[in-house]
Image 1 (cartoon, rainbow, N blue to C red):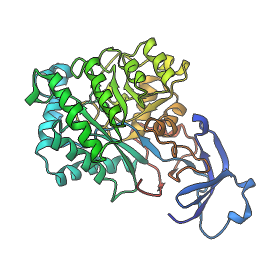
Image 2 (image 1 turned 180 degrees about the vertical axis):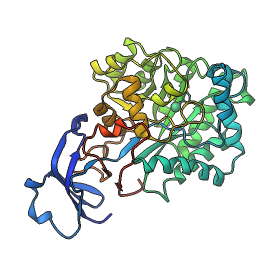
Image 3 (image 1 turned 120 degrees about the vertical axis):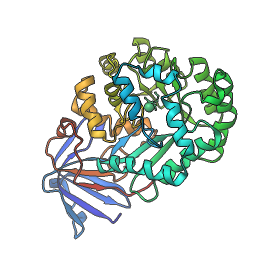
Image 4 (image 1 turned 45 degrees about the horizontal axis):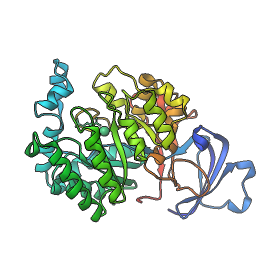
Length: 399
Ligand code: NIG
Ligand code: FE
């Protein structure tokens, strides 16, 4: 990325998690980093030069961060969508051997090239919507080779694109058929073989689990977290999505980066998140697609000052969504976030949920990931339903 100066921009810097607008702003970029941000009137004349990018008064924001996706998978689940609309529940389909296991079968059968091709298309859609950093989970392989394959594919998607990818090992997503009725043994496999192998290969940045009646119990989740800790990996959790098993408090106890979903989290869970500094990731796409009615405790999270993120949860079963702006709109309409909270939840706080302190805010010293929008008001980004796209994406590229 060449040294350049952005001028005449309406900068939504997101400093402090607010819009923190700089009117008639300028931003100097050097070596892929922001060197200076402020009003044009205060610009050091020595920073001016030939390499100026004129925003003509348009809105500029940090690049968006999608901090929770399962976008590496093969096939689709349209048939299950039809079954659910005809009356079957998500849990019933899962218990009957469908759900995650049906995607697991398609994913195990796919070659790495095939998987990269299908998944790359979903990633490209996110990027077109302004996502410059994305987290991708495994969890549709559920055996040693297939889980590592999914993580390798996820990592490989970064190279040809101007995007940063963080990978999360979600071996504890569901019990695969070969371990049916032996979930504790499957957890032992995750702890004793899968986590060590992924850590040794350097393929995972974090470890996640699905703590739920149709997933893993709190005790099993605890074992997974202990193994992650032994291998120096941070944790995050699919917590309290369909019922309250105390997932948020468990995640907090292990100093999780984030606790995700949280529809059934109670007051004690919110307080635990606050104490541990764990970010709350809200996934309105899954709430919408499963036609859930139990709302996450947004008012309580706000009152306790727990940072709230918004992510797509892009996956075939509960959220086939590839627009983060649409997720922002849903977070506002369904969960009553303000458009400002939704934007903070897809920039500065979302970066924190990935343990990344170097992005998500337009500030000197941060990465120069930024977006120019055909918009004036930052609330416009969450206002449209069909996912608005930036007119320009400026990013130093991978890593
Ligand atoms: O985030 N809850 C578990 N995992 C995914 C759904 C996975 C699937 O149904 O394929 C989720 O909602
Ligand atoms: Fe998820």
